[in-house]
Image (cartoon, rainbow, N blue to C red; front, side):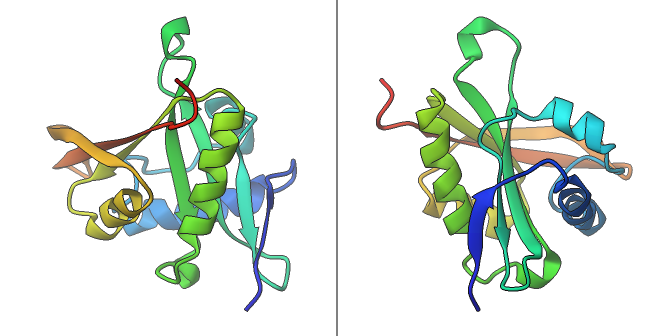
Length: 164
């Protein structure tokens, strides 16, 4: 099957949010329990470094975007990674294509550190990020509750090798 990597466009939000809803429903990707409106989603993420992967039918099967970690000027080059795939396209090796493109794009936009906060029991996501150059920083024990159960989150980061 052929896939096309392209920048996320206005109008892609409905499909992006459908895929995000699958992540919410799965209970392994986010503390969110409901998806935001397209407007709220757009406000949460940087306008740059948004990418989608489409299948041969021009259907979006995965997306990635960056969120600010802080409004403080000192952290302007640090962002949190979000990457989600349609349930039917997970585990096919497509995530690395999307994440590697976002890493390159993030560096061209001046980001020096990307971070990911992943549920500690989500072994496949942890391995995926490590395979793509992220290192484990630490584990935040019982950092939040999801559906009444405490969750540990493993924090990973990737420091740019081109921005010093």
